[in-house]
Image (cartoon, rainbow, N blue to C red; front, side, top):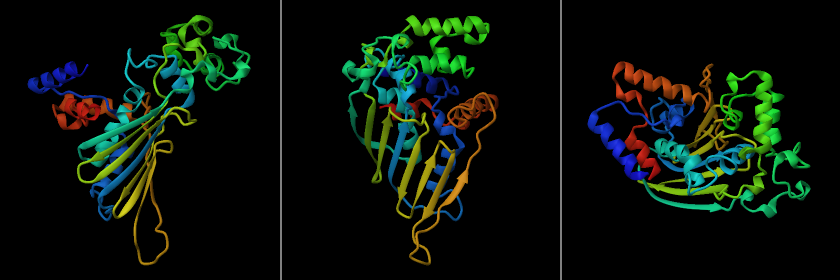
Amino acid sequence: DEVQCRAIAAAAASAGVIFAVCQVLRYIPLYNRARALLHGEVPGVDLGRIKMVDHVEPVGHWHWAHSYVRGNWSNAASSTFSFMAKSCHDIDLVANLIGRKALTVVASSTPSEYADPSNQPKEAQGARRCTECPIKNSCPVSAQRVYVDRSLEEGEISWPVDVVVPGLEDMEETARAAAIRQAVSDGPYGRCAWHCSEHDVADNQAALLTFDGGTMAVIKMVAHSQELCDRFTRVYCTKGELELDMASNSLRYRLFGGPTLATPPWSTEQMEVPKTALWRHSGGDYYTAEAFARAVRTRDASAVKTSAADALASHE
């Protein structure tokens, strides 16, 4: 609710408290290093003015089925549209990399593959639940594979399995296996992805943004990918270009020109992911929590990278 969000932001500002919104991508060393390179904060590197950003977020095919077909964000009316639900972090990240205010936004989307039951593979023979499906062991989004096999064969009891059966870590192994099988057999996460009647959100969305200063950005959310939320960003500048690859947690950049006409070489930098339980999002979860704790401990709000006002701006 926009009115309530604005009221929260105003109350936080009025009270003078330390307030943080967990836009975790802002805290990743990979993106902080890229921002420093793009804004002339690294000696000897001048990429010039940012003219175009091309950013893609691959959601992951089974992640899409889990969260946006069977799960909490499957219906726009009860949650929000998929681009906001999944890529609000990406809009915030790109705006932060550019460092200017977005002036216009044009968005486009495609209807979801799973919104039409006629798209169900013929080999499924009309099955409504994965446990009854002839292709449950080969379908890429089979609940049998995503939840049962993942937990029982690979020993995974955290996300996404703990969404299907909360409290798995407190169960004995036998009870855990029975609970997962039961949930897939008769719960909402065991439904065939092509037969989730409430599902209506788009599976591919793109937004074209123009920014103050003559910069443009294209942000794409792609549901059907092998990569799981590992963003890829390419930034085109007047004096060079830069690429960020979240999958490898690395970046590279090169400057135009040089003493010869040969293609200039890339300079590559590799980042480290912290060895912690909060490693997700390339360590963004850990660095977000650490920054907030440091801000509270030292009473220094500058440690927080996303205020309520920042979050409101990227969601507008």
